[in-house]
Amino acid sequence: MAPYDSDSSAGEEEEFTETNVLLGYASKDPGDDPISRLGGRPEWIDAETPPPAALARCKICNDLMVLLLQLNAELPDRFPGHERRLYVFACRNKSCRRRDGSIRTLRALRVAPGSKLAPLRSEKRKEEKPIQKEEPKPPSNLGETLFGAAGLGGATGANPFATSGTTTSSNPFASANNPFSTTTKAETEPEPASAASPPTIVETKADEDLKSLPKTFAETLSLNNTQSDAPQTPPEPWPQESSQPKPYPISYLSEAEYETLDPTPPPVPQATKMDVDDNSGPGGGKEDKEVFESTMDAAFQRFADRLAQNPEQCIRYEFAGTPLLFSKTDFLGKALAPSLPDGVGVSVTSGGGTKGIPRCNNCGGPRTFEIQLCPHAITELEAEELSLEGMDWGTIIVGVCERDCQARGVGEGQVGYVEEWAGVQWEELGSSGPGGRR
Image (cartoon, rainbow, N blue to C red; front, side, top):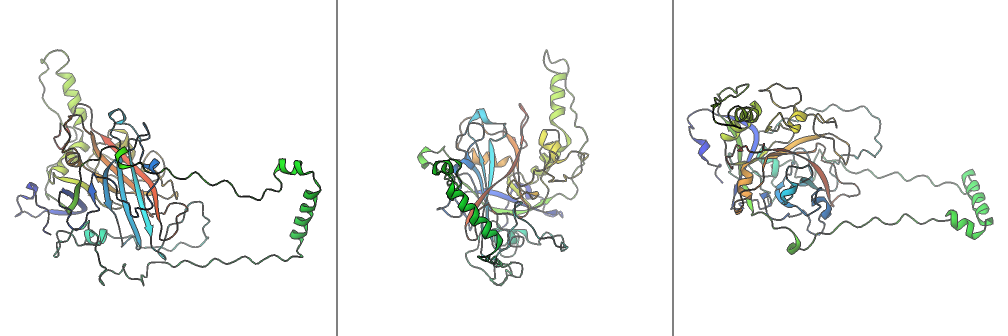
């Protein structure tokens, strides 16, 4: 498959700078990867074990949400033996827009037997000296290591989001003799207590005392109740498709390339100003000028300029990378980049406070950036919509557990689901997005 071609590739005689960000573009052709896509209905790793429907309900109106993004997110270089996917959902109700809980994301995971798995925070860890490990370096071909296929810019031209049907010997993580995977250790059985030991004698004495009590008194105190707790409520099943909200049309992410940028972009001004005629009548002039200058902050201008170089990108992917902020003046922008001046990249922290991506609710470990949706994804998702009042987010930033932990109670070879963090930056009311939708 040839590299993605767009109008932004003009001027190829110049030398462009290539980043580690993998851009995904929408296409009606599934290509080699029908899994990664925008819209449609979710396709689970195992159709027999879907997540509880409650995880895909809006936290505001409790209605079932629709799928925005489904991504094949396997990373064999980082997590060998981990079959993982990401799902991003959004509520269709207009009254829920621009509110927390109207967009949610899930991470599905199935760990092959013998693969390394991150411990949960409730598990006791052995006190041992930590082994220093080298910081994982970005692979030279992220498209190939992401989903088991060569990047579009490579010699083979294969889709970096596609899954390979067969395992080649060139992939060191696909071998059963994976040196990075750990085998499970057999638990040591506790030594049975002797029948003549003092604890047994005390326990027997307690039983005798219990038998001497009146039966009704013992039943009231439940002293002789050896039954386990009642089983938990079964997870909420998914309703029939006829009862689910109408999905967005499917656009496959079968075309991708590494981000290339002009090596000498124009400097971003600290404050963008515009001359506005102050004599434009009541309610205009000065007010309009202030609104314009507030929306055109340096972070937004940099966001717009960056996307303009590859205007049809729908997603930006870089595990443990840096998200491109839509703004630094809203709540999310201040939380992710609280003290950085304009023109400096975002430093994503994960201390569990308000100054960064919150920690994983499942294992307690830090979260890291993995993917973000861009405004052009709205154009693809709402291609068949007749209403002018569509989605109005500027970007959706997804943070995931950096250790790729498994859901509680899920064993090896089984599929588990963990809700991850979705940070949404909304367009300012009355503004036009960088994609020029409004």
